[in-house]
Image (cartoon, rainbow over all chains, first blue to last red; front, top):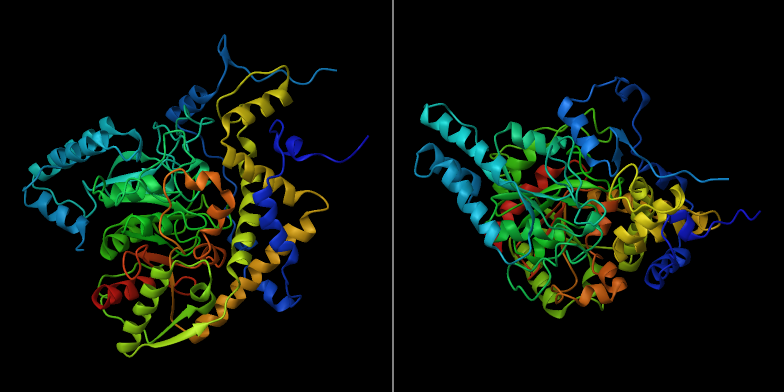
Length: 89
Length: 465
């Protein structure tokens, strides 16, 4: 089986094709000179230090928040939220 | 212009006006307006809040500076119980279950939200034409675009339908419409304002940004919204900027990017006006240095490569099951595909597809990873520049606003029109558009975390140009 996935599958957009305008942007990057100077690669790091990570806490949603989340759900039947049918076979 | 916030505050405190009358007047203006700047009005909520402010004043209680001040919100921010559509079909019936941190801070300070404002869908655009609510018209000339993506917010401020508005800036989406509509618009240092509750476009450059008619109002609103937030781990602690500190300028050295001004793409009048502003600075004894920078097409391509990759990932949750209007098909995968195909705009689809292209095996090394490396070099370039100058001054856009309809025909031209804003986004720097210097304004940029210097220089320019 081919492992290649086309952009329409990757994007979950029917019939999607790469755009000519966007490809022109990518061509500029392909042809750009990027320096191999490793010193430059430390500038833009925005990672959060482990010591600065917040504690994992479970926060109970308020009643109104839960109600709106349910309200937003696109399909309901007999009090249940209905998801689309999963792939068969 | 003087601070509108302080002026209205004074009028409320001295009982020259009531908050209810003020809010009603602004709501009427928003309702009747023909600029397509409104996605939904928050009239019930706004009038309830206004009545509370009036009751407080009647009892002789002290009110805070932002209490009773009406403001607008770009329709990509959560405000519990209100529709947050991102100007898209996919979320046209989506209600915010919670409130964004930046907006909550304004509510806590007593400001009154009036309106969810029209914008490019998911922030995807530079003209506010990519929206299901109709193209936003420019406040100065309604035949032209308002700019984008925070076009509705800029127009509402320019027309004084709101006292200030909260936009979002990923690659210029606050600064460019501010320039097109002749107002102030700030993209603060990345992380200064929490993005919790802002619909993510490109997380590595997304910023919350205020639009207003004076530097002072920008300062007031920035101070209220800033601060570290445990709900956004990229947020940073910052100190309050005082009015006194930014009142006098100590800035001695200003730089500008030579290649921006020598480019063939720049409008002749914008170029001439920019260079005239530079001469005025020199005449004031400020040392002006020409700086070398990356070519505009490299900046635009680097920005769009990273932004598309990030938006492809961020918008993958919009599938009709986790979020959004579902269109049922024969199975789950088909349901995802049909839902997204029918509900996303052409521009949004173009960006998602572009993002998935650069993230695919075989392409990521030569495009995406190279884009990341280029961003590091751009940041390094900025670090070196700010060892030599205090401020970088730049035009906001190479050209004047296009006519409504023109940008949609030529996406590449629209991407390239962001040439002067995207570099500062990639550098995560604080940048303010001021409505001076050229017909689409000037951008004032300082080193990371030096938002104070940006406001200081804006005050200085107010007197000078």
